[in-house]
Image 1 (cartoon, helix red, strand yellow):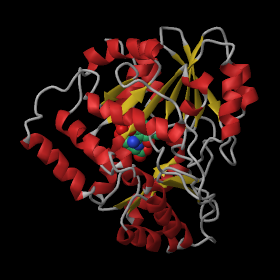
Image 2 (image 1 turned 180 degrees about the vertical axis):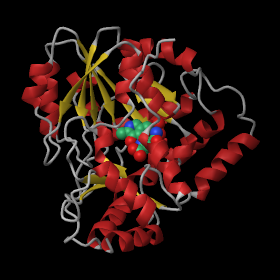
Image 3 (image 1 turned 90 degrees about the vertical axis):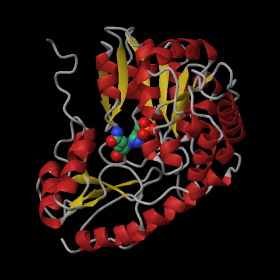
Length: 378
Ligand code: PMP
Ligand code: GLN
């Protein structure tokens, strides 16, 4: 048989996670919290099961959940998505992203992706016969060159993928970025896939700029979000996609045959939990404390860094320690020093010589302190 994805290997997160477990390493590689979710949320799921919400949910998602998602987006970004026709509950953001790409990318279509990038976009594009067009962000600062983006647009450009707050760099897109993007795509029929899974993890009083804030962008965008990230339950695999009706109608044609519907009791529980906005609005402060603890206690003679502006990831440049390539150094850290991280080359194309590793700080202070002892002792 002929593979559709001949270059794709098992994801870096699975490979490194397995290696970390095998060698008993402290794991700051894959992005997930090592502490429990709120007991209240867990008991709400249990309650929903006891109340008998154990059969299929509606294909588009439980209406009450779509309604409260719609209210939340409107309160935060001032854009109205109709819960009936413009929001679909998905199996995490991953399925929302895969489905949005499958819905509109035809064989031969080009999709622009900025690198470094989270690893699920390109395989989804290629599995649908599309062609990823990769644009490197600036080497220092991970900024997007919008003029370069404009030059890369061709009559075959179907979609552009953006991700803010950005995994792995921790950069956030500013209002000027989105205005520039809006201006460039306005005369085209290019769609936007906006991965906003870290929307509630933004630091230093900055604001998350959702594409839904920009009217002309919103009308051509799929916004993908994840409750796994927001409520410390990555294992529940639940998120949603919001898009204007004509796009969502098509999205649902694929969604209904890929998964049909999503875990019902969890959807019921989330409705209750979302009624208190503090459950997500306090996440910024919660993770900023973790970022600050990690960076304030790190030896600056060993690592260079720009503090993460959002997400629960921090990049560290280790040039001052060694000239080893990042994959090699990450492996040595696991095997010899018992600390796992993700080499940046796994998100990259060109900057193969970057001496940068990604660390997840969604961990207890005890775990972070052990990791710091290892890093500072290198
Ligand atoms: N996008 C980005 C940028 C991510 O880091 C992740 C990983 N959590 C996802 C999407 C996937 O989210 P989910 O676990 O909800 O599928
Ligand atoms: N988003 C997580 C990360 O970047 C990984 C999730 C996954 O392994 N699919 O670490």
